[in-house]
Length: 159
Image 1 (cartoon, rainbow, N blue to C red):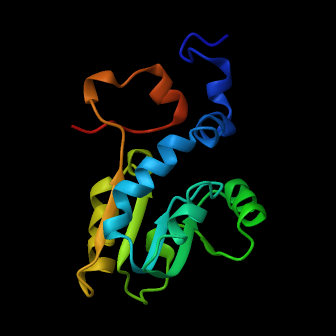
Image 2: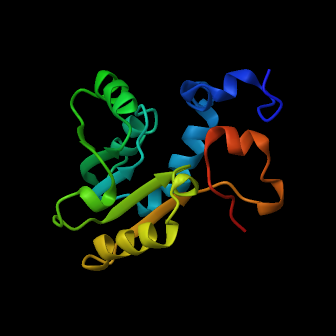
């Protein structure tokens, strides 16, 4: 066992997603928290295998839903799970410059992006024209950054 990874399964890409897969209450609570800000043209950034996508696009008021995932393996899983949802493979910077968005959802993604300031700037640019909202969930407590975080690949935790 690698001493830097407290749980050998954590080295597997599917580990974090498999844990979240059974966290129904967590997913419902997060979507409920975001619901007042979810409407119109919405984009889920870093959609992974799509476990949040069905709940997000089912929110009343979301009239257009698209997802974005840079990892080809996760994009394939996403398409299997959500065949009727528009999925772009790539990053926010690789999306066409329009249409503008009403809501961007980012759940446990920003901490994996080296240049998080540039990412947030791009979110703001995409939301600015419609006065949209960013629904953001990131790991907190910088002092808790640990080997398990490193195994999952995040660059940071936030204050």
